[in-house]
Image 1 (cartoon, rainbow over the protein chains, first blue to last red):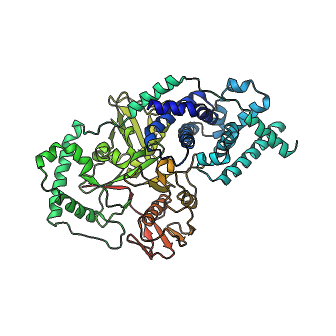
Image 2 (image 1 turned 45 degrees about the vertical axis):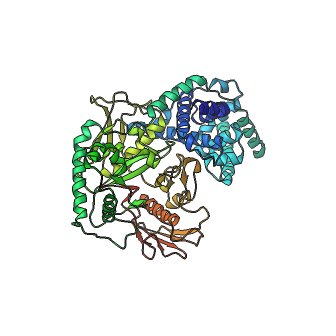
Image 3 (image 1 turned 180 degrees about the vertical axis):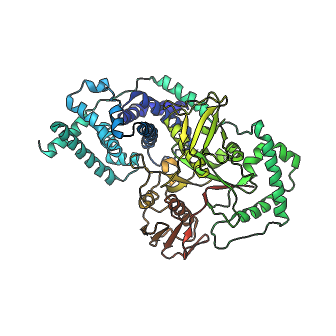
Length: 173
Length: 398
């Protein structure tokens, strides 16, 4: 088991952690999720049939595991929302996490885009992270997301457009 | 700034997003993973002492039932219209199966009771992945397991021919019924748990050991799904989680101490099979961004997608073409064009079973299914609308 872990860690850990972090934008959550991912992978490694690449498989598991985190978080929010009645109230309560120090040192526009990622749909966020931040190909992205390549291209196009619109709104505001 | 230039700048900025590194050391991470793996490993299945008496009583009833069946006191009410082997058929199958083991030493059989529960006493009706009640309705209890990669929850239906009618008798011995190695699933999340399911009330209790932890949001999500699959049909609305001492317990960082039970709807059923183990129908929900599927056509398209890395295969061929009519809220009409894989074969049978379960999750009661060039598949008469099944992944408890 240690050997498998070592091998996966050496090859993919940095990318894996980064992918999860940009999705959840919270270090502690990313650490918890990455643990979950390794547990799932190590438990089922013997059944990995090699029909996709190891990396695709690992990222695919990471995506599903992160989805679980979001679903859980959504349930909690729904519960809170029922206390406050209005989603707007809940929005005001949403904790605006401080920017990570790696982002703080960068220029304003990058910081702005980092924040605006949260206003994209989750599908769009997946594609933006995998395609631009992780620099994966359309093909690899499609495999990880279990989508067709054309869906990746369409979502990517819409995601960039969405960011453009959001930037314009912020500029006007 | 023109649109194109702005788009380019956005892409450029995204490319410049910094590498965010994990600050926990590799050794520490491995240690945490290893500890949790040790805790999550499936334990030897065993029956706890407090279940011994009820279990012995159940065996006694089962033996009585077998005697009744063998003496032919139960009539074979075989319904030729139903495509699936019905309960009575299975009882006769059991008779045949047991006739081959008549020489078993009874005392030895009792001594080896723990093992026999998961091997000889329970089986699945032939290779059917769905179950229909026949004229006699027997209690059905839906339990749930998770796939090996802890991604999906898989409902399994216990069909009890000798039921006490008390769900507590079934939900509290899941580990003796489901052989994880036979199905390629895990029920580790339910290890050490006892359920208290009151009659006629909407709140059940899940009693956990003092040191019970869900460990991570995936496990928490699976537990929620399992609870939904298991208890929604029993009209439960809430599951309160308590320790054996009756104290409320928070299981995870989300402060999980009770779970609302909601019916699981709008699913796409595919096949789950690890290596050459038992095939099961696995319900897939849409991704978080769009969950659940809004319409049945979305679910049908999902059923065409393989997920090989998760041991999941499509139930509708990816290149099959079909049309549908959803104008009748009770009956789904689905017309498949001819396809080389369609015929009176296992793949088509499983496709039909999966479609029926998917339709059921969208509240249809019937599916008027036509397949060009195919009239009959494994007993499914396609000249008439097919009724949606009563249950999925049946395990007959004799």
